[in-house]
Image (tube, one colour):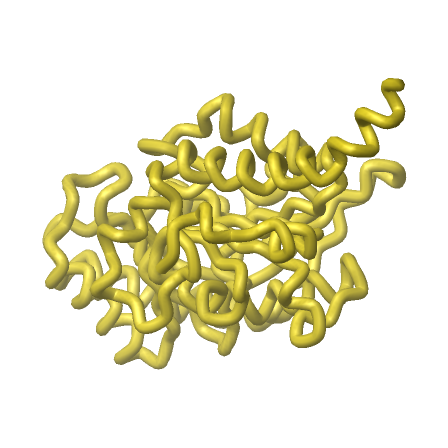
Length: 277
């Protein structure tokens, strides 16, 4: 991983889309700082498309798509994307699985839920589970005392032994049935929303994250940024982000946003000076 400052002008000039994880990337200690929200707004105001790519639930993503300065949101680790059309006042929703499939999978996830709670002391169903449509989130440190690594690994094993997918975030183990992840639904969202083929245009995209469920994004995008707390879990990665910030959590995201926006300010400085004469 290179220091964020190694991201040079030519690379930054190509960026048109900013994708970002939320928990412990835009947030800090479970809260959304004003500076992080302001960074999202400044990025969008500068003409960049901004899209959170998160493990958080459908209910939260509906609110985020409506109220945050974002252009769309991918949620539940790729189960769907939501995009709010502000002119038409319409929420556009695209799911990986049909409603019938999601209902069928829910009963299978309930079996896993019972097994995890029986076999992994201290684990709990995540407090945001009621707002989820496609996955099961097991809390290992958000609202419960932090579990040891062995317990987290065991939760993953239980999902996988039942034929499910499992990804570890900074706070939850998220599990589901279906061959998708953050990257696969990001591909669909970018094609539908922006008419963009990521295989052709990945150099126009930057992604920021911090945890193992961000690994498909880190592996795919050349401009991938880990906020400093990514260093805490490097042992869980095969593919690392290309760059890393000096600061953790939301402060790291602001550091990245400032670096990206400063490059645009410097590039436009000669034109601004000429216009002021």
